[in-house]
Length: 133
Image (cartoon, rainbow, N blue to C red; front, side, top):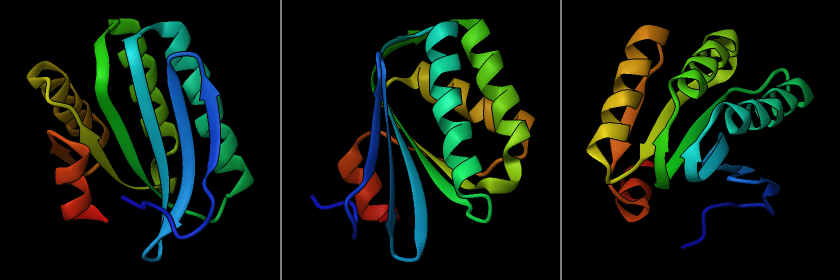
């Protein structure tokens, strides 16, 4: 499955990989989470998120949160992530979540309600790609 029209920008942070790419007139930030989402991991991923938004101030991004390999999350990590969602709302077009874990999908839906974001949730990347890309 080819997901980008151009070579994606990718930054690995231990526990998360962030890719920036464009396709079908949309700009994407694709976060792939691995293991437990901790406060430290949230902070590191947010630093990269802020960096991408600062380098591209006129762009709005579709966020893909690939949580298929996320084993869980800390409340502090979730709270910090929600704070960031609010602070960069103007640069977020929508959020796409991929997880087969009902708890992670439910937490993400709840986060979107508290932050005004549009969120679509899918169980697999194949399902997401068919609907979104």
